[in-house]
Length: 243
Ligand SMILES: N[C@@H](CCC(=O)N[C@@H](CS)C(=O)NCC(=O)O)C(=O)O
Image (tube, rainbow, N blue to C red):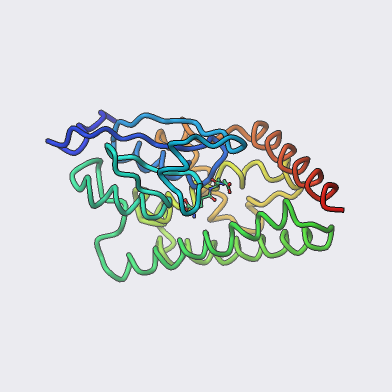
């Protein structure tokens, strides 16, 4: 897709403060690609955050942050909405559905992904005890079952994506997690995307990963597994230090 001129008549550049393994940064990169917007990607070191990140997101100190010229926009879901507002003409379609009810449904499930699924996956990986990790895995599987139902509801059971024939808001929001979901058998020893259990979501994830906009930024499962081992080692070191 040809890159759009940023904000027709708006000379401000787009810069994304991100991190390769972050599902939240990943979703913003997919959205920027789908909208055909040129941007500079700045890879942050989470162990040594840049002054620019700390100044741009002093409240949470997290990636992603989109900088539009000097204006920082933190929080991935806020960024997705900003891209539609600031660049309505860019890309083949708006990220959010036009219909108010479909928007509400997409936002409901996006809140579920960030408010529930993310925390469950963290517990499954980094829970302090074996029991907590097992409960996290069970919760994650149950959440994916719910998202299987959401896919049927949103796509009408016939379309390729949550949003219809083309990926939209919820595809991008959940799509940020596809790298981790695909790598989970290497990360947590459990196959989360199991076509026998959640066939629609498993096929959707494969379709999403094949999108040009996603292919370039979806992390390789082995690299994610290696990163997960680093997170586990950090957790073990922190636990040992607090004993
Ligand atoms: N709600 C935030 C979540 C962002 C987030 O959790 N980012 C993580 C990376 S995946 C981060 O920057 N962590 C750094 C830290 O917690 O210090 C969003 O949607 O942007």
